[in-house]
Image 1: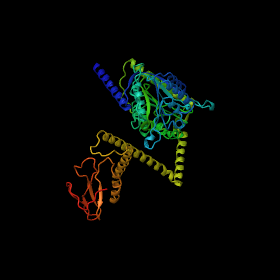
Image 2: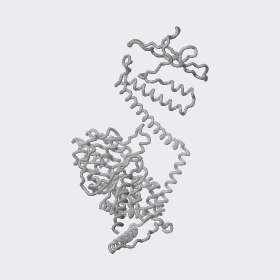
Image 3: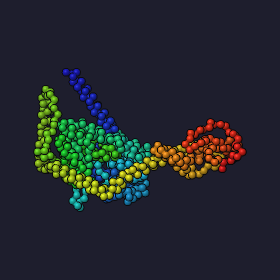
Image 4: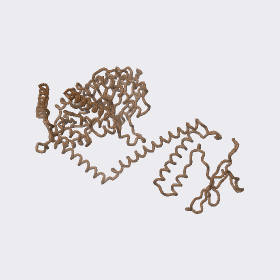
Length: 611
């Protein structure tokens, strides 16, 4: 019996190691213990914490923010940053151009630059940007003195404070404050984003001021970059690992079929899957599309709730009361595959339990979406395994207590639904489909009368992509020219005569000659007209610093002859070139014969000297 127990323990330990390895590889981040974490709710707790930390900074302030608004709260944070910068503190602000375009165009950040702060915009419009402009920096992160980290779904904007004068409540959102070893990957994530927009951050700012363990929470920092899909892999893995509960809060829910299938399978397997989304969103069409995904989830047993307040902007998840996630990633393709996102995954029962309690509190202000009774489909459950014989009194008491807790939870949910009320899925689903259908019909009519509405976006997309590729090629040519100039200066040619041409002349001629030469070579693969190919190739010459034999034409048939300088020419004298026949042509399409190379011969009496 003892050997069997030891084998069971070893197997359990092995499975836990596999799970830990799967989580680490999916997230691309190791689990780091010894962190002190404090959960912050809404603007009432997050904004004052940000202000106090930035105002008391003594070393540095690093901010990576999607929206930095030119409003009351944005002005307050900007003034604090100006004060810190004037006192010699390192201030680095990285904002997303699209999220903060109003502040960018109004020169909102100029006073910060004048105070000595470093400010950069992520992916501003440019000819070389191309389709990469679709990817945005959606992170919300603040690092103060390399000691304290703030991660949230909130941005620097007064929108999260609501409008009390108009009776609009503040937005519902969640963030956290963290100290401990996780500061190291946070600084590395900020440095990576900072380097993507210009010169890299100095290495001395990448070391945390205090990386010693200061708490008991184990956490991972998942820094998603375009095409890495780290958070998507982790979300899918958590949906597969959850055994009892999986409670999700998302602001812009437009999940892929893969993730919808994972949620459905978890619900069919007996997991309590709940989804809380906004009823009225600041981006209305996203809320409309979200409602079209309710029915397959409801039919599988997933419970869907809509927030009754103005807006719920939180992006959180709680699984089994032991794992939790807080950050900026939404459950849609844009966040999973295209944007830069930042999330903190907590593996701590106390913090996960606190976040689960907050989720249940949020459900008190939400309305559940349900299927009609006559249209409800039975949810298939997995086949029960053969029941093992129960152990002693202790095991029986634990199982009975667990069953009683589940029954109490079901009763509480039923009473809560009765008090809060519920809404049939048709009341949300029908208007959503109607809105989408009407929009598509109107778009079809507009394109029928104005075909340029369909052609213009395609032309713009192709033009932007083509210009981006061309500018990238230009940058590569300039880099190539720079390296060639450096090599020429390092080892000057022995046969140079006279002063070299100006650098600007060489650079311009070299760049365009090389650019069009490669362009013509590329055109050969698609253009099969021989005359056009030869005309294009002969249109441009090599740069002046490249010694290419000159070609002259003479005679009634303009035969090509090659000019070269005789060997042994004394330096300082002007070189004389002699004509040497190279090729002859008997007819426009006849076979070309090339004479073998020979040494220098004396020019004929009628030979002319090249100009």
